[in-house]
Image (cartoon, rainbow, N blue to C red; front, top):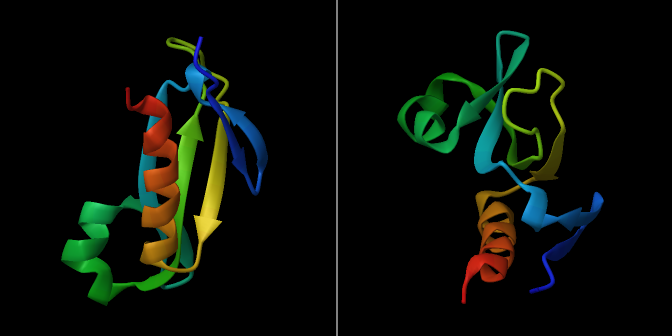
Length: 93
């Protein structure tokens, strides 16, 4: 079996156990901090203060209420894209 361990700043992540993987942004809107999609940020980003870019690794099994997520945070979109490219290599043939 292919090695699916991604060495990240949060530690070793077993990508074979991921149920969802998605990029997002963290924004500040009048003191309220929220996670939004990259698409949302591209459309409405000028109306909020962008705090950071994130890559969310969700390991929550289906139908489980307790969330098991690890989030990597980046200052720039370029850093996020680089990390996404590194992770994508694990899922290529």
